[in-house]
Image (cartoon, rainbow, N blue to C red; front, side):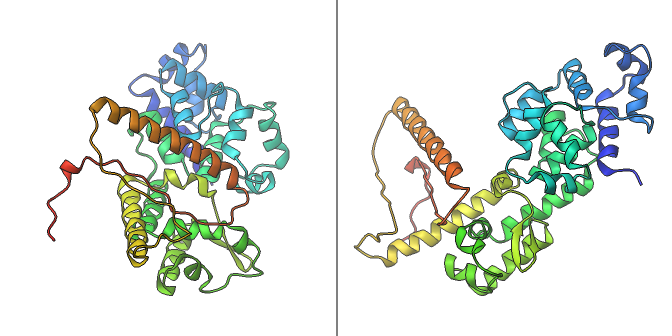
Length: 325
């Protein structure tokens, strides 16, 4: 049975070739024989370095795509640091088993001693990051349509986050030291920690299990993929849905606190006038603030204790609808 990622690599080369003949593209790439025919057939596999050359010849935004998705700013053909960036904190034995290669082969990729097939790099991207669909969409301007199963899985994952706007907090709770120290999964532990109902906890977990975001490892729930990559699953409507839900929850908490400020809350707001130029400067300050917060969160993510809600909005009040009260 043909490996799915081998098939995707073949179809991708064919898509990128477009109306050119296989021989025309082979000559353009500097081959005297019909190398593209081999890549598109079962006679041979295109390697990562050959794919890089193909992207360069066709002026595809491979470098920009890797920077955008994986924050990789090295040389696109340098498979060692690129594979390490995609791998992240995943254990090498688990990754090797997941993408059906030996640990020795994976180690050689990471040392830059072997030029892996494009198919295996695509499989690595999907296994470690769930980013195969956005990777190929950015690279081909969303014109590569041969990803129906992968798009369906992505849709299920997006639906899971959209239907349960408390979903990301559930994943965050599962990633804390407190949950990891439990001998086994405890029913109701998450909802008590997050102020949810048991029904809400059950719904989020079941949706995540169905969408292959969570799996049971022994008696505990575990993230099948690193939580740091869920931002590639969350589209704008889903993010807005989650923001609205948690803003309402936190607002109700502040209302119930009446005139006293709870020790667990840091908050404030200000209504003011300013020029357009100063508004741009304020937005720059907010961007720098979030950049610093993101850096702190990244360092703290290895050993988290708490699940925190943080939001910030800058709104021109003139755009708000008339208050009905």
